[in-house]
Length: 338
Image 1 (spheres, rainbow, N blue to C red):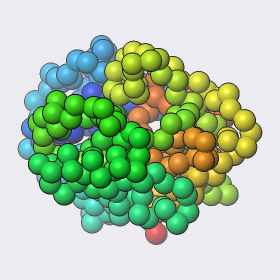
Image 2 (spheres, helix red, strand yellow):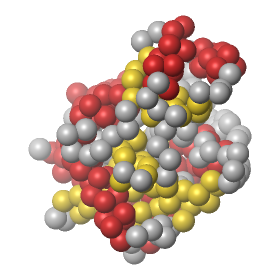
Image 3 (tube, one colour):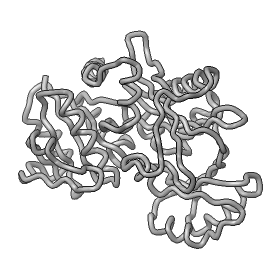
Image 4 (cartoon, rainbow, N blue to C red):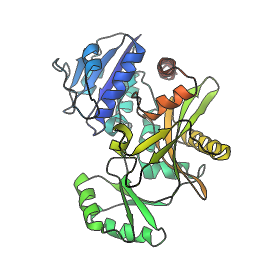
């Protein structure tokens, strides 16, 4: 069996992907590493070069070797090793929306994480909420059909809510996140959203404690990891710089919250994982407000960097990171064999 760590990709989360790949490669030991470049080519990367890359969250990774394959599909069709299993260190875009998963499913290639259907469903925040709302409490939201009319969608939501959150329908790492209330000048926000040129969702802002809960597959099925609370300083939000550069945020693991709140958060994360049909592991983001906890979104390939949330939760649960990685590989091989 040969493990291939696939990382990079064309999404704006490829910097996080590089950092995840570094942590996986360092912990897993002997393995291959494939970099999926932003222009689509695939490069077989020297492991030492990957591990020595500094400041991955801000610096682009540029391998010294030339690309072997012009695209990922050709790479998968001409695999140079026998009995491969892919550890997906991809985040966002085609790496998390079911596209890569579907490529591997049709070829019978084992890969870690959820399958193509669950990945696609979870990646679309609006669709994910529709699927899970019979199992968990969700915040009110509406998808924006036409960005040019988003001001009307915001106004409609603000008739019932004091504040709203605007975020891409698909994506992660809290990029493109905006907040608005009834006093906000929407001009600058709408201009910024238009520049992103992606579908958006307008969601009710729930005032409360920001919680996140990982779920992993165990011998008896999936189980929830310890809860993390995200604390943010005034004027900051848990955006990309907050998550990965430590600007204005703190991650408290385990969360210092009442037992009832912790149990509810873990139950909701587990229910969302099951309802969406996830495999291997996931991470759900929640808000615990006055009316209880609300489900916001689920990530099927959450970050696995040294500073990411799921590795922190694994450590708190007493699960060695290497054991977690090896279990994911074993799950991938068993799923492909069925």
